[in-house]
Length: 270
Image 1: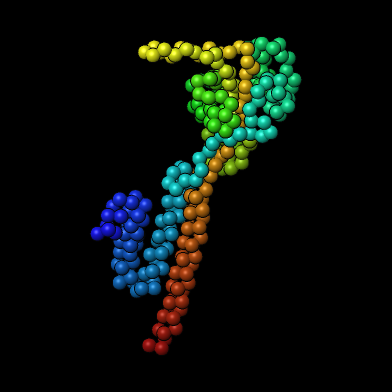
Image 2 (image 1 turned 45 degrees about the vertical axis):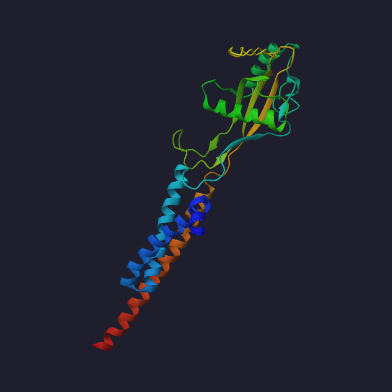
């Protein structure tokens, strides 16, 4: 009774038991049917070959569409050598800009000068409707608030997001890139501006944030970690395919041996 209660209340135990029962019923039931018709050894080889052939097929589908058993998802990570650039004049030293900047000391004009220089050097300014912009802003928020503990939520706003790199090759054409296994480094730069403290009043909507022009803009530099989303599917596909081919080879060799034995026995009977 205690064992049954533990299985019902523990999700891990329940999952293990369900998988064990499914494997025993489906694979064991198939082996029971095939084994009674073909024999224990031959039936075992055929069922095992069918199992690994099915696993190779499912692994190939998971590999193609990025579903099923997945690894780490792609994420934005802090870039080197500098992640948070606290002054626009430090962008060149942080290896983000190659050309020098002409700064006036005004936060707004310096931001425009930096934006112009970034776009001239290949950085793409993302539109607010771009889904990649939201992902980069969320990652920069995590770096500023949790890792660096420099600013907290509500103390700043993200003004612009710049994107550079990430091209894939080789490509047959722009729409067919299934074999594009190689990538260039993918970078993102998020421009952050501190805001003036706002007085909150009960019952009223929060005031619109106002950028503090007395403080310089900050830039969060990140690099894309492509993760290992399809890695488990790749291992399953390749490993299952090798085992499936080996089992097919064993079955084929067995058929050849059986045919040879039958041919050798036929003249003797005659």
